[in-house]
Figure 1 (cartoon, one colour):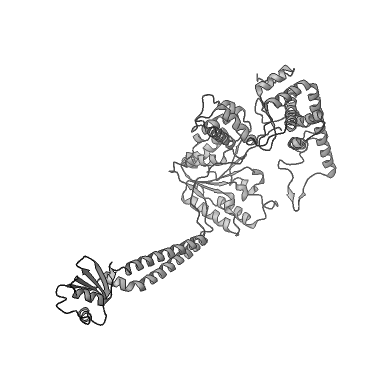
Figure 2 (tube, helix red, strand yellow):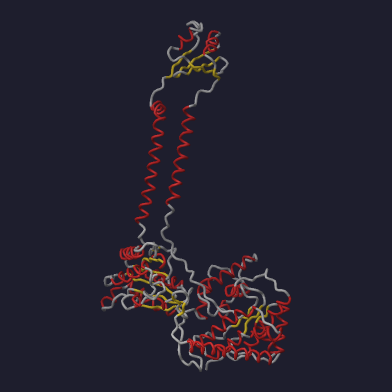
Length: 640
């Protein structure tokens, strides 16, 4: 397998903003449960205190009368209908008196005379005051209070749901204020992208010193469109512009405008721009604007009334800006080709800033930024890492550094070594090692010859990149891989380079057939990549002598309409010629791979056997093997 550098989506962290509201139904149920719990607590406390009586043994009134006659009782305390008797032995007994007669009358019926009561102290406690009335009215007041509390909480929930419905059309933008130092980002925090930062520095100057431009008659630009591959730092740059200028930053995703109800998106756009004008100077940042800004009437997302109304409202708001309003709209997309022309006309997005993938120097600077809070061993070398990561975006490099730290922590080490960084490159490119995926001896032999075929063809063909590593350890979906890296990064690729790449991709396929007389599914990805490249040579790049310099397909391929019917702008005859040319390129590449492996069979066998023994061959060891077998090394071309 020939690994290609893939670029993941941007993972920049958006500023934290207002928290979303919870579900009304869940809040309502929680409120009911709270009311019931409070009611039970109050009921329990009331029952506890209302039923509380003086501790003591309850006895009949006749028994108390006999004790009084015997002179055992020292005092009597009367409280309502309850009588508490204190005995000489310090015991306490209680009884109930008659309600229609006094206590002395009741005791006299049992033979207690005034002389018997002479040595007994009698006291009466009359219930009165605040707590008396509380006790009397509590059985009536508590249910009423509970009912009032329940009605109040119910109305509060209904009012909250109504307020939520009223706020349905309000903007959900996350706001970062100028004095928020924790989330503030400046150009110092963004490594690389020198041209983009230079272009955006004008926007910072517009926001900081508008008078300088107004006096000379210049108008402040209304919109800035950031274009670039996923992970190149578009969102981070937008935040850096706000941080450099010291203005409020309103951030929202294009998909957050669109709801199931028509008109909600337009309402949110109006609310967003209203807030931005009040906070001016400010920046409004719309991430992934292609979610609402697709070309209308193209049949690919333009038929949604809600999306069209949202786009129309954005256009109206940008046109409605007053002169020198000091509100700038910034948007980011990795699909500028699908945007509506009305968004891109002068007066709306006046600036278009392209953010490319970082070159070698930029990658080293980005790695340095992401290494500030990490502990490294003495052998770490970020320059080597930058050289081994062509095509990596800023997000890829951040993930690489994080994976290196995770690998070191997993092995109980306190510092990150160079070995961790090299391993993390392969993990980001291909995925983690599949240690549980153990190849059988036969599969291991097939994989070794397959990868050796890739490597030998790449080392012999003049326009192929040099090999840096070969491995038959499974990673991700690949049973093995051959890592090749260019001496220098290229923005343009020639026809000969494409042809050598296709031949190198077929090296594994050819090696399997030459050695084992059969082919496996291991070459499926190689065939897909090489066939797609051959077709692009014919239909996009004009690199076919028979078809000529004609672009038959766009960079995104053919657009699908309806029930899977493809629209194309060439006839069936031309389609047949395209297939014929693609087949011719693939056949010639296969023949070149066969001839290369047949000519250098000894080197091919030596690399394969070494792979079976060690499973991994690094660049230094690999070069020693092929040099010993008569294959010269490729040297970096020097510019004179």
